[in-house]
Amino acid sequence: MALIVQKYGGTSVATPEKVIEAARQIRAAREGGNQVVVVVSAMGGATDELLRLASEVTARPDARELDALLCTGEAASAGLLSLALNHQGVASRSFSGPEAGIRTDHRHGRATIVAVDPHRLREELAGGSIPVVAGFQGRSITTGARTTLGRGGSDTTGVALAAALGADHCEIVTDVAGVYTADPRTVVGARRHTALLYEEMAELAVSGAKVLASDSVDYARTHGVDLKVRSNSAATGPQTWVSDGRRTAGAATGQPWTPAGRSRPIAGVAGRSGLVRCVLRRITTDHVLRLLGELAERETEVELRRYGNLGTEDAGDIALTLPEDSVEDMRELLADTDHGIRLDEAHWTTNLARLCVVGLGIGRHPYAPLRLLEALRSAGAARTDLHVTSNRLSVLTGSGDLAAATQIVHDTFLSEPVTPLAHPAGPDHAGPARPLAAGPGQLRSAVPALAAAE
Image (cartoon, rainbow, N blue to C red; front, top):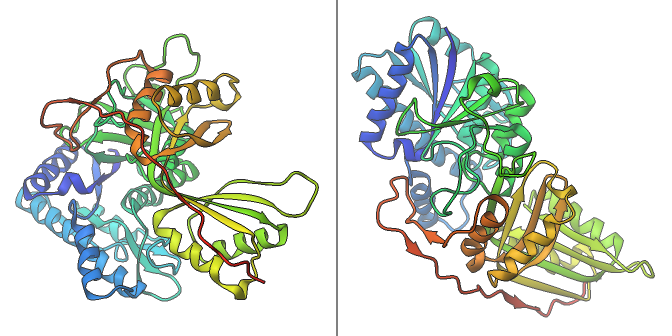
């Protein structure tokens, strides 16, 4: 008898009908001789609605109370799914994250799991019941307050419970049939992998692929949890295994798709929009260290893209990329004369996106960056801040260019060129395909008059 943790995402429980279908699939897994623990996200759109309600009450919600509010979304899903299972004759009980033994640090909105005590879940399993756990949440070991794990936290909950319970594997049930070389809802010719290594999936997740949260992949790699990604439409259909490579050779049918003429597959192309670039000119090393220290202390999400000088003076340039919702923190920090971060000028570029090509060893191929830049030029896409690592090429482009750029870069690295088409978003892909409007996006740049601070 195998022990399986199944995690159902928000699109998989978005309606009562989908909740009932999820219950049928869970029941089938149980009838197949398996023990099953279920983790569930909030119903599709529920978290955004709760955030909207909070914003109508206050512009600056208290972090503790906001977490208490957001936890109700997953709790509602867990209760509904447990009701559906009981109605289908399968004993089930719902649990909040704290009740399931999820313990975290104290950071509200972005907590990290520090311990898992699954004894209550083991008791339910021993009694023949299926536990349904609300994902995305836990309890702080220091304050006892409810905490949330951030977007995608239900994936991490599922992996953490699978590790603590010694599960055979963790299934991530979503609206696509596995992990593809690009988002199959928007990129023509995207192909499904039957197997990926943790390292490949981690790079894809960090690059913007939404099928798995990056924290969950890191947790799975650290604790040796095999992941199976499958569609919510069928429990026995196509799938992708993510592991260290030992499990997938026997578990997956077929071989990972490999581009013709290449000895190692390219994992895929992914992107993330809503980014802003900040370049600080002639900033001293001391001030750079102070700035980075303050950003780290505030836990501001930021990526250092470039730092250096000509070697003739202490002052240099630093380029940072950050999401739009972190810009206000950055501006406040630069305007705060108490921190004494002296700089001559700051250049802001908005309306940016990051496009990445992921593949083990791709950065060691000398022609790979050239092919990326040529593909972007042929699409008329903006391009700046090319960054090359061993397993990833990334470049900043315009948000308006991202769709067309992703298609042509995917064609360049992964398939024969095809006429780009765009499909309406959504799991059912309803409606006809239509040609992309491939006009280049515009970057909005400004140089605000920031006074030098002593």
